Amino acid sequence: MSQTIAAIATPPLPSAIGILRLSGDGAIEAAAAVFRPAGGKSLAEYESRRLVYGTLLGPDGAPIDQALATVSRAPRSYTGEDTAEFQCHGSPAVLQLGLEALLAQGVRQAGPGEFTRRAFLNGKLDLTQAEAVADLIDAETPAAVRQAAGQLSGALGRRVGAIYDGLVDLMAHFHAVLDYPDEDIDPFRADTIRAGLEEARAGLSALLATYERGRYIAGGVPCVLVGRPNAGKSSLLNALVGYDRAIVTDVPGTTRDTVEARCKLGGVVLKLIDTAGLRDTEDEVERIGVARSRAAMEGAALILVLWDGSVPPIEEDGALLERAAKLAPTILVHTKADLPSAPVPFVNLDPLPPTVTVSAKTGQGLDELAEAVAALFPTGGAEAAGELLTNARQAEAARRALAGVERAGESLAAGITPDALLTDVEEALSALGELTGASVREDVTARIFQRFCVGK
Image 1 (tube, one colour):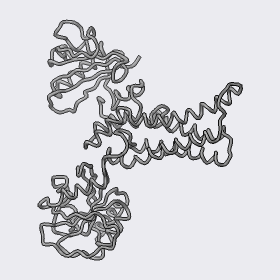
Image 2 (image 1 turned 30 degrees about the vertical axis):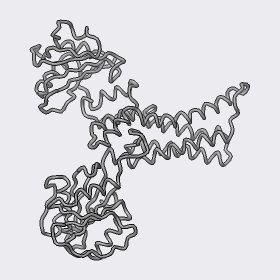
Image 3 (image 1 turned 90 degrees about the vertical axis):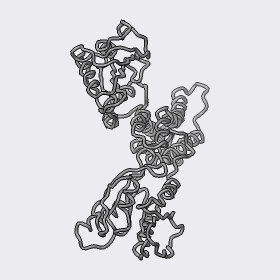
Image 4 (image 1 turned 45 degrees about the horizontal axis):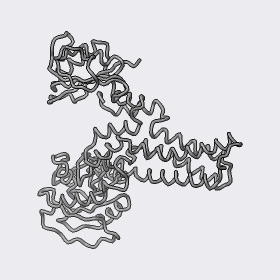
């Protein structure tokens, strides 16, 4: 018997519609106790997935709203359990009273992600699909929506499952030959093992290669703005985010620490980091800021190197551009296009990073900057939507699976007997099981679902 849970599934703000949902063995009975259908029957008498109009009652039994209700009976529901849902007017007070009425029926408040966790535990979703639910809620771009929706439909699970099934076939063939020597079963040959391992290795390598693009689509691209003091870094950040996030003055060295913000540019979410101007300084606080700026460059996936276009570049500008280009994809941004421009010397870089000229004051060149970002981080690819690895947990499991397959291949090349090398194959299968949730630990699932909002 599963304990019945309930939660408000919409944000605690006035809105047109607010939703209360329940799941568990007593969900339908609890919902029926606080809802009076207009047709006179009990809500429990209605068939599954039919919208029923009626009156929602508060904790004292008094009417609090005219609402729609629906029930879905196990196992044909989101969680795999009996579920019920109320669609109310979106007053936070109405929703809270409705929740209190349900709690008075012995229902308990759901925890973060508990509905989706029950769907996972009841086999309605694998773990990659459950993670896609959170990704879809958090999606900020069309590409992130397509990736999460595809993963929710099972695209990543199917891709992993094909690799898993190939390795299981290897294991099954070996054990069939071993356990039934008198049967007419094709012998277990080295070339058969080699072909199977190579197919799995290629599949896992290709899967791992999707991680960088997948995590940037789902979570955004860490983008650092660097340059000398007064190069226009804070002004550009403010122009990109659309409000005064960073302090801007004519005094060099205004920014002493990193300032972070998010924006969408060229269809890509950028996690912008404005940094202290890079220069030698005797000021202890500014020196710490410069050190943090250099550390931020080390962890960036995109670096915007800003040169003040109204003054001639100096040697330090060229050195900064060269260093940035070695660390991450880089775009050279000539700022202050609204001022008279200074001559730009030849930069000894081959190839020269993409270069744009912008004015944070007028907006000139921001479209070109967006195009340069989009070119460096294309959202399309050979994979179908939803087949990308999007988080570190998935990538780590895939790496362990690949390592197991590669060890098995090395053992085969070294002449080790099949029963020994297949131990590595079993480890690869275990890692793939963790990726999809077939064999994941309880503490891992708890950590995953803590990311979810209450009511989902």
